[in-house]
Image 1 (cartoon, rainbow, N blue to C red):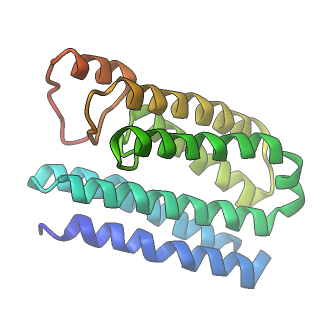
Image 2 (spheres, rainbow, N blue to C red; image 1 turned 180 degrees about the horizontal axis):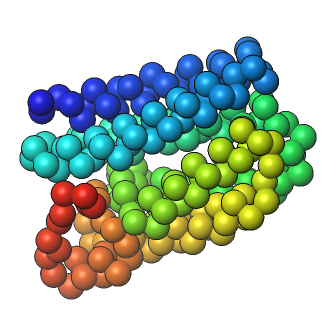
Length: 199
């Protein structure tokens, strides 16, 4: 039972190259399968943390691994979306580039300050992940952007700003910090009660 979270993370990691190559090699005929794999990956992402906290194995090693696999998984979906909707993505290249730059900044600032990559699993980042799910569903399934895409961009900027503030505020590197407000409380020495459903 204690290895279940690692198994779920491994499944998500293995789905990433499958999604990438399906989009690259199969193209249009792979859209439905990619969407199916995306939702399977999301379920593994939801339950690996819940199960880990439930059985008491939510360690730094597990959470850092989870965070890095999340990045690989979402990047694979990003590349798949580009392969399937190249011209549509090119129209919005500037906004997408801003998100990539902010993601890189989170890692750079964390490594410069703590010597480790960021691993906050912040609540706004989780919300952004859900908006990405909706956006990729529209893009891959229906070849549309619309309000879902705009919402994902806005939440992407806001969630990355939150993570940057968390990193800057924390006196020491920590994983599973829900928001910059919680980081401020940690800085003041206040302890937070963790739950099974959320970090």
